[in-house]
Length: 340
Image 1 (cartoon, one colour):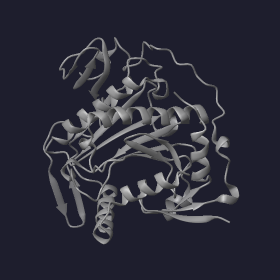
Image 2 (cartoon, rainbow, N blue to C red):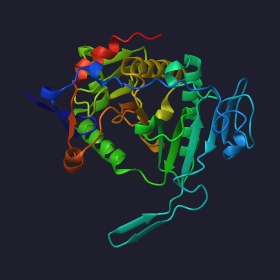
Image 3 (cartoon, helix red, strand yellow):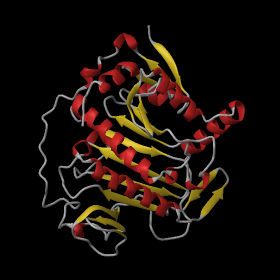
């Protein structure tokens, strides 16, 4: 019989359609595994093509970590303004209210983080050190964007594959700093505060402790992070990686945690790639804005969402999700995928 589960993190109801549930291995993509070259002459993110993008705002070279106003050579990670930015870099943040209509000037930050000079170097194939450099870049850019007085919320995310929304193959992530805090983040902050006021605990810490104790939905664990599929996962194989130490904002992470997150994120994505045939996916850092640093009721995490199914009319019309897989089976399947 189908079962409805409530997700206490996202505050969504999920229908686990057990009668039509697929086995985990049935989600593996049946596609020709395309072998990518290390360099593509027409790719704006490949070394030597730096003039095809705006000048970088930040670059990691082999020997230094520096900000730059001109093109760099020998770089390992390169950050540049998005050529087709969703928000304008110049201008003031102005708010206008006319009756029920509200507008805010579309100023903010939209950056592309080119993760590697190698066009073919996907996350699953990367070394721990390469991933550590990337996570440290995320942290530095998050702090820099959060320091802009026009920016209220900073979102770090990666789109991998066409179904996830990417238009360029070269491995890259994005950062967008918006002049407002979205209702999704506001609602989660409010729900989390309400839970803390009622029970005197962080709901995220409580869920993490439960999942760690039960173990049936744990995919990977390390000294400082836990990766698991949620009890009421909204979609097949969706996971969260959460720090064991309570932190509301990503900016609170320390160097040891950066190194540990780099390893567990890479290994999780490698398990997805090996087990499901390199599926398209998104990941995003779900973090409170910088001004909430230190609060006891919220807890940042990384959300990983493989694009294995499509949202249809019922989900759009009801706001309820149908998951045709069992989180416990998905976690067991991924635990069995061995990666270095």
